[in-house]
Length: 363
Figure 1 (cartoon, rainbow, N blue to C red):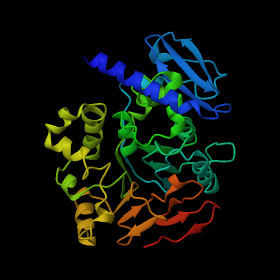
Figure 2 (cartoon, helix red, strand yellow):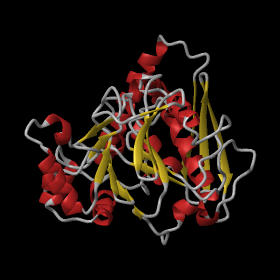
Figure 3 (tube, rainbow, N blue to C red):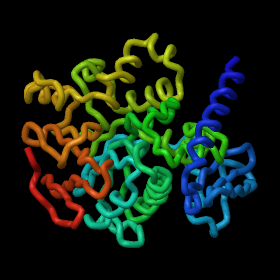
Figure 4 (tube, rainbow, N blue to C red):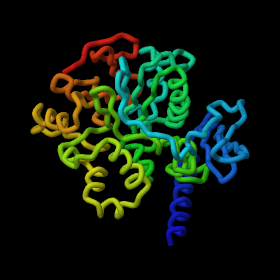
């Protein structure tokens, strides 16, 4: 029955997407690559105009793959298959970082912000030395260059480490939505991709793809020095669970992402993490009129941090609440050609602009 249902969904999506695409100007449409993992090979698919280009590369062993250097992105994916790879969620003695969130497919704006604030150069190379870059969730949906962002960050992660720096990609509610086949906010261009590739969008990023598997190694929450980072926020209900970030990250990875709702709903703690007061959806810091500085301090005391940096709730600018106890870095990049980054240097916060200038924090 599940197979029949899946085939029906794929067929329906293909029909709808094909109908959508009929009236579109597709002469210059480009998308990909999407890289699918097979037992002893990787299959690369690009879309160029109305054509799907497919290339398959055999591997001697999926855990030790080496692909042609001519490919326009990293050819070493071996870390994705290293089951003993240690996951780190807490980082100390960090002198500087830049944080950005909710880029939502706005590739050009993200690049412009990172270049203007000297994280990367005009060639996309890491020039931030031993600094850290934190993307506080929501790569997916709304914009039309999600795949470009994914591959850029996939590549930048390795470039940063080679220079002594660090890129942290946190997962947000829109990543969770894609994992769960909730495609409400997918850009119309990707409807055309689904039609050509004959796959629903979520299967382009499932655990049998390179980017999908890479994303599933990413955390929900991390800390840098005395600062916690999480996409939406840690509510008082969640903090009462007394779960470490390590446990929260593991629960999302093993028990929430890619799982059916009934298996989540039978567990009160999983249900709490996955719903409106959970770390991917919570808006109480900004939307609850009864939330005060005392509430924020209680959460921070329980967590053992001095600040929480979040995205998810769109603002006109990066904003500080309660003397930087809570900082929202969702500066509405999703609208295109606007946005800011949070800059931390030697214990001080400031806002980085699209032109490279810096401004004081806003309360």
